[in-house]
Length: 194
Image 1 (cartoon, one colour):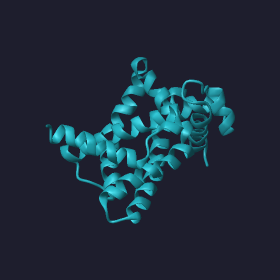
Image 2: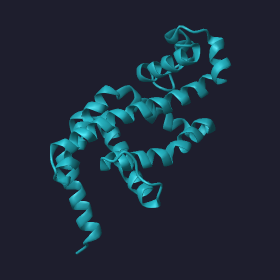
Image 3: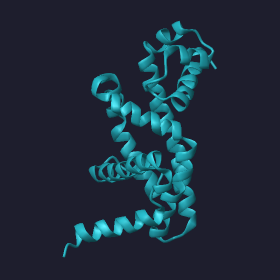
């Protein structure tokens, strides 16, 4: 790998191990085995490098999410069983990528006074939502439509809420059956009010 790739790998490792706010430029340089000056040369700043590393790491984690959905699709032909299996399978992704989930929440809390970070997250929203819409439907991709963006936003909201609950209290996080029951309850009260 070259210095740029080493820095990216080091920054991702730091995100997992130290989080977003506690990672220093020196941490990244040390972890990657590259000089501090290389950060400025290749990325302009530590923040720009961390932002790029965060987006890339989230994309890599998306592949792990995809594997969970693929496995759930093999469980049953029944959409309800597959839905519950996906949410149960996500626990493994949360465990494997715990540091990244925590770093994402930490970074999101910084967006109010970090315009570049806010912009980096905003620029990925549409693609992320379309990716989640495809992922949860077991499709390689979906068309760029308002319907699919909305579907993806729904799954994004569920996923972020689930991650937050799991980070705070893993033993109290809902199971796949809890998700399915909640979906039924909410759907019944919203779509078929008494």
